[in-house]
Every structure is written in structure tokens, then in C-alpha cells.
Figure (cartoon, rainbow, N blue to C red):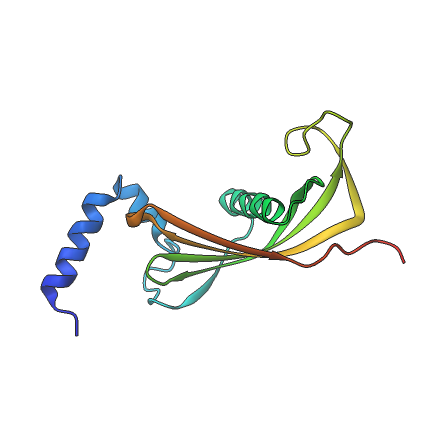
Length: 150
């Protein structure tokens, strides 16, 4: 059983190690769900820009881990859940598509053509944030590219 002194110490440690009250608020699962229990998985709005950014970062990690330099970009974030577990665990399902760029252009910053329904990746990412430890762990898997023809 955890004593009240331990809980108080943890809260004080979090208050001093987090940069601002806004950061603590950002850690909350959702402002509209004030009584979310620890360990409870909730669905969140996948259209929020922060989840697209997190999916892009996951896709970059996937390409680096698999020595891919094919020019995939996140096309759509399909589902996002969050769970408070010794930090915040965010799970993201997203679709990545291949972009065709002119030689010398970078696929993430250039205006390139989308190769759809050509090569696509169905990806699943888990991002575990422990802000008070300044730690983020990301795992990402993608299904092999599905091609548009036979």
C-alpha cells in the first residue's frame, strides 16, 4: 500500500520536474474526460495535428530501422487511443503512402505526386511518454506494402 507521504512526494517531484502547468495539462488524457482511471484505454480524436506529427515521427523511425528510403508519408491517421500507465501510452493506427518526387527533391518537404493506390503501408505505433523522466519510447510496425494491381 502506498502511503500519503509517498503520493505527496511524487506529486511534488512531478510539479518541480515538469516545465509548466500546461505540460501537466497536456499529459491529461482529455480535458472532457476528467475521471479517466489509470490503465483505462480511451479513444481520442485522430484528426488532431499532434497525432499526425507523432505518426510521421514513427514512420521515419520505421524507415530508418528497415533501411527504407522510398518516400513514404503519412496519408491518414485512422485511430488513436491513449492510456495512462506510468506515463502516457499513445497507440496510433495510420496509413502511409508512397510519394513520387523528381530527382533531388525531398519527399517530406517537396510537392510530390502521390502514388495511390500503389504502394501503401498499414502501420501501428505505440509511443510511451514519461515526461518527468524526459523519456519517450516508440515502437512501430508496418505491414508489407500492398500493391494496387495483381
